[in-house]
Length: 269
Image (cartoon, rainbow, N blue to C red; front, side, top):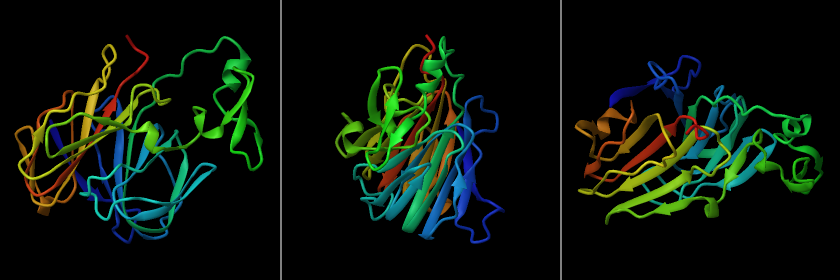
């Protein structure tokens, strides 16, 4: 896999924002961004593709699009193997953390071309209509029913614990599927894998036909880890990798978190 370092962005004078350019040479990925929040982050548009805001550590009041989720976060550090907290970000969604303390990761991939619609009703069915004030619901013209506003393709959505799948893994490894194949995202799936010292795993990606066509991996370790033959040390800071297959992942010394991001077209066959 190709190693991609995180580098500080010139737009943030505080130095708390860093970016991994996994998009360079990629047909699917957009840059990954890691923000070390201390207080309030600046309102920021998500990439021009499907994104996922992943709370790596700390507690945050999260805002994205028209949604808000208060005091979200279960981990003291990114290395705590607790259930992830995440928010799906449709293309060009403004997000912000307030009263936050801890790192947030934004991963993103280009959204595949939307399926062609045959009727205006199908087009309207992609976004919430006639939202009921205070109910969190909007009208779906396809089914003729009211459903949660978050369920629409164009809406940001907090990923609830019941939507996160625990994947069987070797002893000392915790594997959560945050976004799976059945989620509304058309091209994005995300796994989070935590490994204790000396533990290794080669995760099986979610597959459907040729999907995924590309894989990227965000890595943070308190000691030393391996992604295939590549070595990552704590002093390197967060690092990303990009390739076409998932290699063996190993926590050599100290706890390690691997965020696996899959991209492609889920509807292809």
